Image (cartoon, rainbow, N blue to C red; front, side):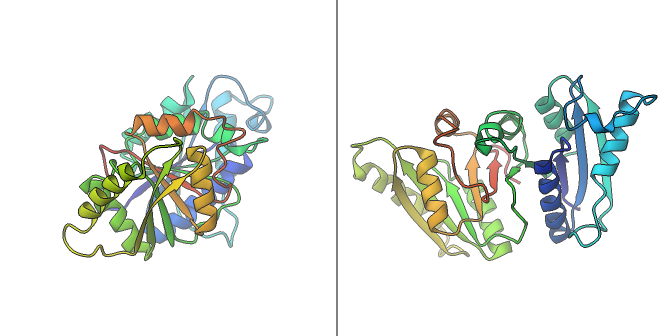
Length: 283
């Protein structure tokens, strides 16, 4: 059965970039793709160009959605047949999650917003809400990312979140793209004994090597930094990471990432896509 990808868009350049990313990935996966726009009740600046006198609200937005999702020749996936969906809903994130459940989406791909700090809007609003509530993996794609496969996966872990189903999922990703997996824990508490992480690291090794050598190259490391985001940013930049993976069941860890001053500390790099997995429903 073909995989399905849901791409929520708001007619912004960031959404267009995410759509192009998803199209290229859909070609590689041989997946079906649906483009979704949620209208919250008032026209945004991005929606205003769609409105013309004499047109109804839904007619104008459907026309804008169709025009926006027409892919120029030469763009990977330009020949892919898309489906389009317009929803009227006061809460954008809820509508996206609901639609993903209705269509049994395998993945959601969303763009990041451009502001003084891209992560302020990326991880602080609709995208972060969808990533925490969706029951399927959610990709958050910052500009100007282009899909070119994945060679280095950074799994941001407290080591306790690596269950057998997650290991299987990460292993499948690594084998598909012949990627190296970096299992990274960020220690942001000064003075914490190193022995504590040595024990956790040993437990993770036991899980990974339970059935012999893992079928992918890997690296396990603890990074000491003043914050989780700074530690991840530093490691990602030094190791050519092209996909950063988080698991949303680890509430303490997740809140640690989201609770920091995003305009100052949450700077993982605007070219590193983020994949948020749901702990309870591995794909």
